[in-house]
Image (tube, rainbow, N blue to C red; front, side):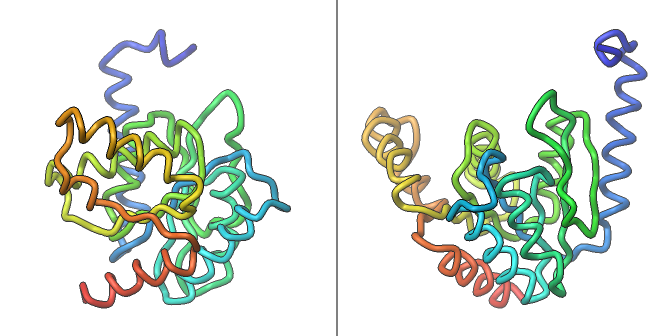
Length: 212
């Protein structure tokens, strides 16, 4: 409510301060993998366990892992990355529900504005992994796909884990969106769907090694 009443000029300064703080705190990163996933998965779920393993696999190679910093699969990936050589990073957002920073973050940033947070998700990313999730995960996925499609960022791997979870989305893109000429066939090649986090990690790690 306070932000809604804030004069526009002061709001711009707050946005600027979030950008500057985020850039300064992450300036040392040479490349990171951003992982998206739902906040509602519990610690005893198979998806949570996969998230922990994904964080472990990436960070064990010295790769920094960035998540949204909250609970569920974000926590799982940070948890897996936390004891490893790679840095565990959480980009937290102020929300009325679901978002509480998880304790497995070497670097924890807090944002008020989604678009500033999205910028930081992409700025240091050399790969994206999408785990099962809801509107937030889909929003972040399509943000990444749009940036790559429009060549606003260099193309990097975008890997979705869980064929059963993501196949319906792929089918809709293929049978409806592509059929209506709203995208090109090549746009479906901007991401790949795999069954396991091991496959996702392997694809990302291979890309990073080739990039070096």
